[in-house]
Image (cartoon, rainbow, N blue to C red; front, top):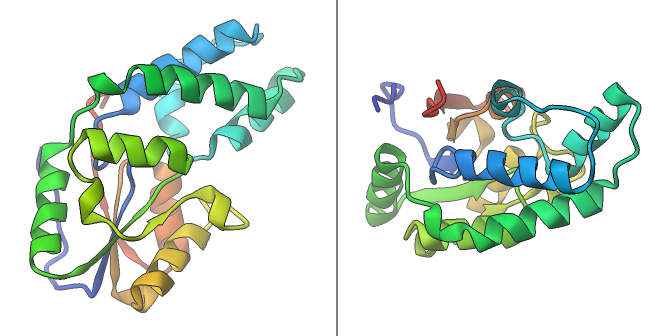
Length: 198
């Protein structure tokens, strides 16, 4: 994987988790599928639609699908089943080497780094731990800490605030369009991390 980094230094670096630091997107897709089947969802959610929705909080995704298909699945129940299924399969997760290498380098150099993920903390921390990256990050931002998830800029702005860095001095690493849009809205430069699916 080749990452196209801007040709300048930044004061803070913000990493998405799923599909960016950890190669967990295929596992998330399986977890979504298992939960939708379990709850009798009246739709077939394709893998390309799943990747297009990367970074959007789980419950928002369920609400949007409900509205589109005239369904009434409980967002909390769908999320909880998905989270439990995902947790049982954590052993399948590995780091995204190119991004993990940068995170370790920045940490070793004493640079300010953080995570801003669309997933719940109960999924983010075990995923990072499994990939051997959790100890690098003192700052982890999730949708529970902000009013709006990606593609709104709230999580990235909070991460910058916690790092004590102006938004325009932050670089974001993201694999999803919602995350890239959030970085743009926050006034931050970003690096797109291509997924295996692409």
